[in-house]
Length: 161
Image (cartoon, rainbow, N blue to C red):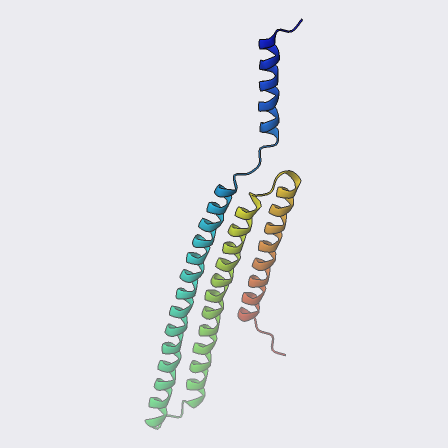
């Protein structure tokens, strides 16, 4: 015959096992993780946007400098107009590529920010739903990065069509 203490112990053990198996996520922790991921993501994006603005401003200065140099050469009676035009075109091409790289960094930061938030939100899921959520977050991230790389590649290798 099983004693009262043994039955109580078995009941407590079974309850503890059931709670361990059906442990649901701490929603307060999940909300905190989501808020942190959002804040971290915003910082990533703002930093990348600031770098883009800096590149844009620097490129504008470089192109204008080439244009000023070309006009100064033309004003001195030089016949190097074709050379000046080529220098301006090259400065614009370099500027476009630098802008594309900085825009890629913004796109990547945006994808990373979204991925961080999505993964933090997935913490609220359990079992196969959590895995599906994480897989979906990763697929969205991979898709965003692929699109950013494609845009960046197109800027570096424009078609002549």
